[in-house]
Amino acid sequence: MPIEYLPLIFFFIALFYSSVGFGGGSSYLAILSLFFTDFYEIRSTALVLNICVVSIGTIMFIRHRVFNFKLFWPFLLTSIPLAFLGAQLKLSQKVFFLVLGGALILSGLFLILKYLQKKIESKDFSNPRKFLLGGFVGLLSGISGIGGGIFLSPALNILKWANPRITASLASVFILVNSAAGLVGLKMAGTFQINYELIIQLIIAVVLGGTLGSYLSSKKFNLKFLGILTALLVFYVGLKLILGYGFGINI
Image (cartoon, rainbow, N blue to C red; front, top):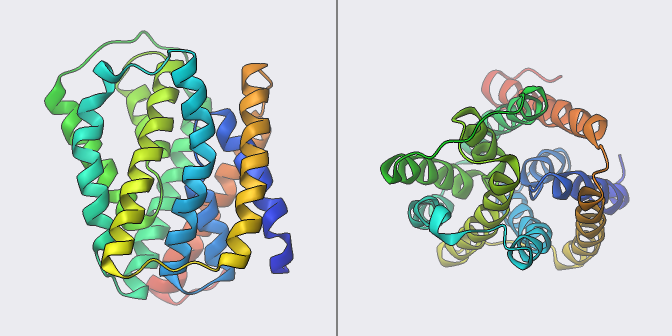
């Protein structure tokens, strides 16, 4: 597939992910890994695009007073420094793509789980539990370049924490701050690499898609079909990376 199609593809990815409170990092990484082999550029690009998309949703959640800092600060306290540290790790190409492949497989499964899960009654849980979950997801976020919301949100739903709207607002803010921490970590480690000509096109695409997705979400449009297709794509690319870099099998 020609690289010229990337902005269009990323527009639809941002459209879907923003409609459910995510940034799209897992899909950006999945698509970029099919076009590029420089994993520093892949990770840097995905984090920049994450920030562009979730900034829109974060502003909306704050304006509508859905985001409650008193509920969220324990997640952020541990996730931000660990995302920063994770981004500074200098992995080999093989190890990075194996980690990324595993993260993408989990992302695909969690995304499907989001649609299969029924409505649940919410409950609170202790700050130490929030510290542990936030830190683990933050570290994975920094290493892989995924903002982390796609792991955190399903985990919170499984643990029956808060309602879906509150969880979505946390995912949006979580992705924003951890993507920013990851970028700072890459910059300080000297591994921040961007194709500026391409990134401008992709930023325009994801901002437009993210804005439209947020609008459709507010109008309660059902993007379930697009979400399932996205989950299957992410799962496939993750499996492709694991088999290719781990076992030398190309599918």
